[in-house]
Image 1 (cartoon, rainbow over the protein chains, first blue to last red):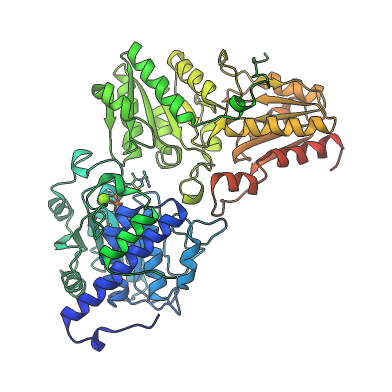
Image 2 (tube, helix red, strand yellow):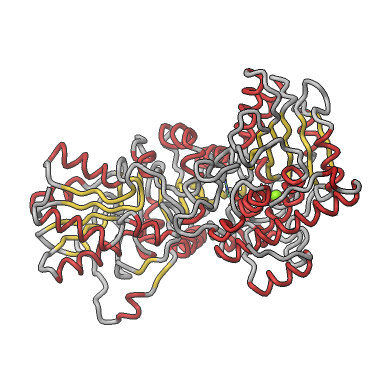
Length: 288
Length: 326
Ligand SMILES: Cc1ncc(C[n+]2csc(CCOP(=O)(O)OP(=O)(O)O)c2C)c(N)n1
Ligand SMILES: [Mg+2]
């Protein structure tokens, strides 16, 4: 797929609209994959699509699909690896592998495993799936950049329920101790985990204060607002010597009326009819 | 001991498939009704651990720690200390791998009266991949002193082992699958810890299996019988303490032993049987399970066949033994 750069577009509004269309394509692509595999995580795919589109299609991440292991690349860790549908769709859209490969999602012997495997797919940095692994890995990547005197940055996307895993907070303490201002944690704050809303399971509030107390610089933005996301990503590091936490306020199931804000759609599988409805609501079509 | 295996007159009923999680969940609710110490801890696993009804009926004996398995196991120790009998119910991969040191220290070393109900063990999560497979749990759990390990084969045995778990003292790991299985035990089956169940007599070769693989081993015995080979089939549902006597007896009376399991064979049931044989009665054997590898992408059924954890795989291995092939 040919890349359209920000400069080729007329202005920020057009750019946001373009990103929004990309994000909706990722949404429908992920749902189509889930429909095919009869397995997947629709809710979290949809809530993170705008963040993924902004990072990869908005040219935030310095990555090169032609050289996926280019040493100076920015690192992106998809810690909420269960949302592989959205992640794979984004990587394919960005050109890391052919779009047609998305057809093989979870098929026998497919490279597109239910959870990402870096030994199988270009662009995947970390094998995730068990929650609470991404941030420690990202801290290591940020430390490596420092040791090697390189300027790459590390982005890690975590779920809000995922933050109930203690490993995240061990990593957070380490990040602030080493003043890792090349690290940004993006929290997909959709307020729903697997079985229920986060606040009626193990409440995560006051989430911003918690990160601040771990000495992260905290930004709260609308996780579906591409311009706001771009703005935050453009201002990194927000404070020199401090890791950043971006709390992206999102809606689980965003963009598809029947899935929005419904815990049951955490791993809901859309029917063919629901796919058609999603296509109409998102205003996109997927043919890969 | 020969279980009253279901006779082959009602073919349809014989082929009916069950999700053992239903039997475990029902057993837990029944036990809670009669014993106020029975309590449940989950890790955001309400549906996958089938604990919705338990939560509704016994909310005061139900804890959801969120996505936090290390905390979950520690909480289990504390509940047991306070006189409760906690059942920790969640995906086997996270309960064992993630919380392994807590399992070692808080449960095994501490001899805490806690039951781990590892859901969807083995490769039941199929396409979700090796992060969600629990093929290492047998080896990890088996090396822990004081740990009791049970791998039920069908819904009847699942319910029976749950019932038994209330009488048991000390930590216990129960492996509960979601892969549909048919019944291999009669409804009058009684579980006995550390005793292999002879599901089929035979003196040519022995098939030892547990969990979802048991019904496949019965199919292998059928296939072998057609070739004139009588296979003994042992359901080794207790992996620890292992039934040394049945293993040695099988080695003495048959021409070789095939173990089959839905786990890494090294360190698992295969490893356990091999250890007994090496020390007490060296015999020819084949170990079927995962070799030293993580699984590729595929459904559980696909992966079981892929690794030869199937009637065909067991038949082939048994033939090698009786024909004296290398
Ligand atoms: C260690 C671990 N425990 C349990 C699970 C099972 N699980 C998969 S997704 C999920 C909920 C995740 O919620 P959240 O982090 O909020 O993700 P999102 O809402 O973005 O989908 C759970 C409990 C897991 N993957 N890893
Ligand atoms: Mg969430």
